[in-house]
Length: 330
Ligand code: TXA
Ligand code: MG
Image (spheres, rainbow, N blue to C red):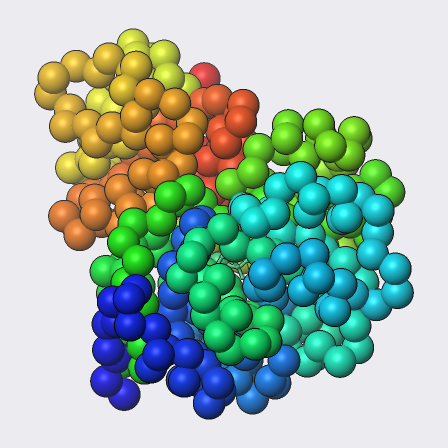
């Protein structure tokens, strides 16, 4: 299959393909999504095939607003979901609610709940409105790879597999949405993401963490993820002196190192450092793109220095931990 890159201003072919049950990659404010008509089982199967995604990992349905969510929920909308949606939609928040049985099994991976989000991106919204159906969309990477934050990154993974990629430039947030299970009381954080958990707590009060024990509640969280070809090492400290000593040891082990670190970590000049910026928001915007770019230089290892868990720091730690095969802590 030939893959065609479309400009954001020319959505008609993308909309027609989605209506015909095909898969189209499009930008959202978090990462690029691999979309299909979420109410068509046959269309949704094509997403799993294009990504190489395990069938037991459910998808997020993308809607325009609260009304779109209400059409997908079984029974009354949990009050926590109503309050979170009121506060943060459109935006990087996904709520898990009881699922209307009309939603295809493939979307829910057989669960009786469904994950729903209203993206804050004009192109994503235009496609949802144009197709007139919720769009199922996971991140537009091959399963296990870093999520794509540009159309070029989607192209690397998806060329030849899907008919269209809509190019909307780099995504604003750079990490996937925060997933909150609203079927529990208090609500449960299933995946930290682009909306800081502190903000979720400011609206609903208590937020419980998904425990490592028992059944996996966000099935996607059990897989290795976000991993480029080069091994990733997480150095869990931004103390420059200590980190520099670790880099010396790691270089003996892996050979050439590509180092990713916040601006404030003052490393010796012998290291070439790609900067994550001065704060968590900038680091989130840059992380996946930097990992993909560094991987193209075929380093012995990509070493990421990150410590903070405040704001988007929690989601950054989660993604780095999943990408890393080795973690070095003080
Ligand atoms: O920002 C995002 O969320 C992006 C953009 C494209 O919207 N999408 C995205 O989708 O990251 P995906 O499929 O890569 O991640 C969805 C996560 C997975 O961890 C999945 O297991 C979980 O949400 N999930 C989906 N439905 C669920 C459900 N019913 N119950 C629990 N977890 C669910
Ligand atoms: Mg994903």
